[in-house]
Image (tube, rainbow, N blue to C red; front, side, top):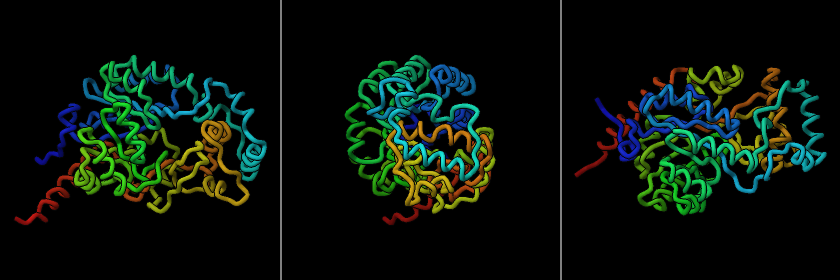
Length: 366
């Protein structure tokens, strides 16, 4: 039987060089159980929730490795104070959000939205890091920012460290911080992403990284993409969008989002700052279009934009406001058109990659 293998597999004790990022424990557990490296996106979780959810994943995967991803952007406020942030939001932005609510007849949310459960702040960041560093999770991934002190402490505690980067100068910072693995995330990627295309970015990062392993993210959807990543010098891939189509994820996804994702092509995604204040790729909807209107104000910086729109985003899904419902997704969304188990997605990725690598070998002439 053919096996997909790179040196990072032996180093990390995984069977497949496939890293999978997701926001729910079932998907992460399934990825690791299938021989990959599941990574739990916990940046919007309270510290106690992180502690509990990492324990659940461990109970499901046993001794298999898995990681957790936190967003650690510089320049965040000191304290978890919604009142302080709301005081900085201009009236023009508040009026625009109220007009959106009225136009689409969106009732108030019954509770704070995902982005307003707490304020992205140094206070919360420290509490989240404490929960992660005192857990038995195998890896800490830094989605935005890789503070050297955090990287050093995670490594001191025996955890693998990883940073997602979208440009060469970000790679230099991450490497200087001492991270163990770099994820070169191209413009194609879903959610927070950078301006450089995957094919342009990856070889530059591989050259900068030297002996540090590089993974490829952004547009990875098939085994052919995995083969291309290896051809560019990477040791594996990092996928996020693929798992939105997993059966394990459906209880965490609004049914309207599932429908929109299945129908979306690669050209149906758009990058907008209206979600968080930072560039964020999502499926195009009347939400993103509203913020592109000439009369719309410029989105605010993080975390002001979080607070401005967080409750409204929660209300949109709570009350099934179909035109405004949307999901983060990469351009790889165009490769997926049905829901199936994580194991089936993984099997197809591996089989396709092995076949692509076999065909590549046939191009050599001696």
